[in-house]
Length: 95
Length: 388
Image 1 (cartoon, rainbow over the protein chains, first blue to last red):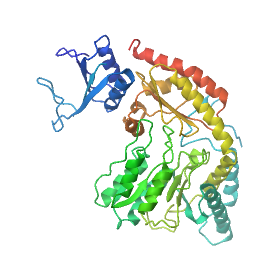
Image 2 (image 1 turned 45 degrees about the vertical axis):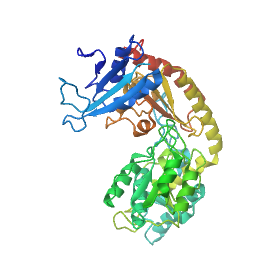
Image 3 (image 1 turned 90 degrees about the vertical axis):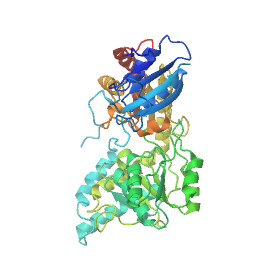
């Protein structure tokens, strides 16, 4: 599920807990410290559990941005990325 | 009449929070009260008076345990109803003093919803609850500061959290609330019958179904000095519109007396078992053992396992004969994780919660501790998370 645009983007939209954290951990495996990853999720548990994963595994939770389909709380969207989804983009830096 | 714990042979029921098996004496009391107290206690004839005597006796017995006066104790339709009415009624009576309702973020949903509703009805903004730390302890300075602020109608702080076991500093918050003239509602639904409950409250809700009494009846104690307003339908009994079930109330009171009689022994025994479970769970890789390790309920243990599906773990433990609860989103009808786990900032997936009954024995806990690591490993294997 790693996006072809960037290897640091993990698309876990549509997946339920604990899969977003598992996909993130799988993507992080073998990457050097300091690497920044962003996981996209539509599951409300992920915005809680990704920071918990960081704490348990010695990574840094950088930020969580809410993504709204109507763009009202946007910021997670990037150029060329579809915008019709509600969820969260959680950014982490590997420790 | 059988006094055996319900459930199939060989099964171990560890989901006793809020709904424990009836204490054997509660069953006897219920039978007796069905025979003697079936009538409406509000009627004036001999049958009604007999039912009223049983009900008065039940109130007196509960009052003695709570450190209240008999006339301060009311039976309600349920614990949820107690909390909802306490917030609505307490807030409505103080409308002139203010509209804000101070709560902690880990109060039961019934308290948080009632507080939001009462504030909305009074034209106030949605209240933002006082935050808790990672152990689930309320920020006591923030709570005291919020209680002292102008315009506060009511404050609510639970004695102990039934999901994670953490005990809250109700004494300190009550002292500040009293000084500010703000009534404090204490939700003691998870602690009454299990540990000593402080008498520092203005309104207190307790849950018979949690201490080995029947469901379908709740307890709400209101100090005489506290003003309340009628919020329900017009009825002779504002706390139980339509009347209290005397057999249920009587059974609840007898159960409470029974569990109080050897509470200290049961508390120490179950505390030792819970410490054992927490220590054993902590040895499993990638786990968060949740809640305050010291100031906690004696019979509740909670943990979250990384890379584990809570629903799958509950099912796997069920397959091994153990009934447990969970606060994970996938086990909730709402698909939202427990607001308590969320407020604490702990891992919400892979969550398991156990609550020991008085009938839970050490051998059952030994067997649970033996099965848990394999059950977690099995779920992780199904999810293919080896090496993460």
